[in-house]
Length: 279
Image (cartoon, rainbow, N blue to C red; front, side, top):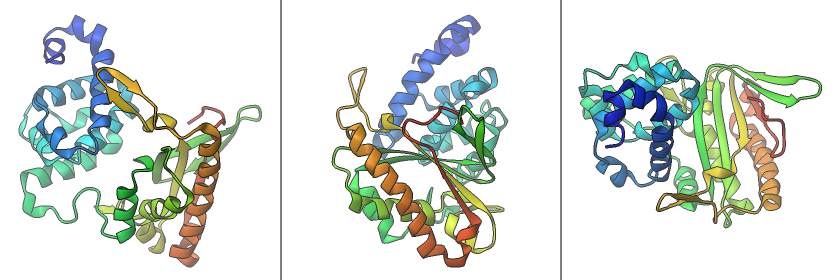
């Protein structure tokens, strides 16, 4: 309801759109594991029109919108609402996610065309990782990425196509949960081939170069109580630092075990917990 007046009044939109989007984003993040609750949200058409307008007028918010879209794409109900609304245009959304939106919208309109879901993954380690609830990750695809390694020397790491992975740990996270998470990132169909979603493993084995840009983001572990965001389940920083370093090593070793000689086609770049804020 808070979005509709903004769509009807340009001044209201200009003054309040970022605040309203922030509230909507928080709601989506906390419903990403509650599919039924996400599907039940009302005002889907208004929300889609708002997101399209926001992207047109606030392109610097693409990264935040991308995060919300990744969540909404998991819902056929939300994608069907987008596909059936003539006022919603894929061209208004962030360019790097338009093809995914198009694919999911088509699947929502024709469920028979849906195969493995979005994103796909049937490995038992996927279920083990998802069920653990101790490591939170947000994954986004990129065509090209850079990470500032040393601010003083202006040193950057550059990657071609691949995945940006933000990771956080809960209080109950332990070392034994790291390998299933690493295997999930490498074998689930999270990246993209020439025409469809594919895993980093299959792409690298086919000779295509891929990258993983890994960054710690403690705020992924949070709870929404009333209108307040709380972080009571976050792992203490010193322990999170240990697990993050161990996760980087696990990602390298798991990639080597799965990919064998194709490991050279995968570039893994990891930022530091207290590293420079350049991306």
